[in-house]
Image: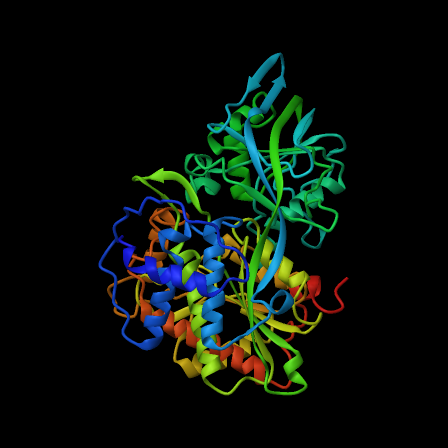
Length: 560
């Protein structure tokens, strides 16, 4: 894809907004990926605005927008410029469009990395990258822990569902071996909550574990092969940084953490009571039981760390009501992607056109639509977040350190990776069933004349895997709208297009603006999001969690 047509315009836009310095540009290799099919042309003004923003944000000059890089800073400057053009007020720090997000950046080193199993007289050393990778350690530069190991199933403690993977197991001073996910018999909400890595780590620490080995299952690698991910082992990891300079949610009690490929699982369970294949089958059947493993394991590694700072880009459309204007509906769309990595067909830049330049562009168009009419009674915040790909960090910082008054955010509308590669009649609202936002969406969808479809992949628990979850954890009801699943022309299948995107383009250099994005669907999604915000903004009452809802009970007002 040629991007020379955008080069001069990008430099002009970046120069117009200088609230933070922009580093000099390095020479970059232009992407060589070809589109899957000829991309449709935008026809309306709304479509042209969205297409123009996607082209800018997914341009090679943005270098894949990785958090903490020059490319992300350029993208942040561009979004701030667009907020200003639309007529939105700055709502970041000190009268700017930017909210500083303090981070710790860590990178693992190959030297000193070790995962060794000593059992029944055998010494099994797994190979770095091919078979295992250590996790970045945000607490010490060098770690080494040797201890007995215990398999703890999926590491789930859910007494309300009569499930405890830790029953009868002693983890004190041990290394926990764990699978991901949660039992399939759980309802979607509880499976989503208990699949969270943070919940698993919290459970292990509470029981005295000193290390963790996360073993992939074949299902984990069906859509994301180990070799593909491991090829980018040099990428950075990040955590939020507290006032004391230390990372937040880093679980220092776990002195070492490592990841193991599904193909190498037998080396972890060698000479134990059950083989990896038997355990994979038990996980599918929901019959996993934990057990102590003979011998000991050693986890070791080195991590280089440094403090960095990135930015959320924040704008505000003030509410028209003198009282309700103090409350806010919050739009989010993550601006970051994963930057430059291993070459694929000669291309190293993961541009992230659909993930999530398109989402940010749809948010900008929703802002344009809201600004063009009478302002809603409540204010509307628009937040292009950083570090979503690093663990929802920018959203978590904003949700816990809002640039508006505490307790005034009434709802979150999140837009992330809308895969709009085949024309559809519908949208998929994720999480709307948890709150009164369901009634809001029903009304908005009727006005926009768009159908609603259920989540086609509830087992992927996307409700806890995008920025809306940071707001949910602070008690704010949220909805996340995905692209549709029902074909509009009877020929092109949106669900198949989604599957093809995930298999071929997700987090790859081929996630380019040259993909056949259906701009009319993008404009419709922007209009629907704007209408949701207007209904919420004009309502007498703020959205509420449904009575008895799991997430409302866990995080809502009055939650323990």
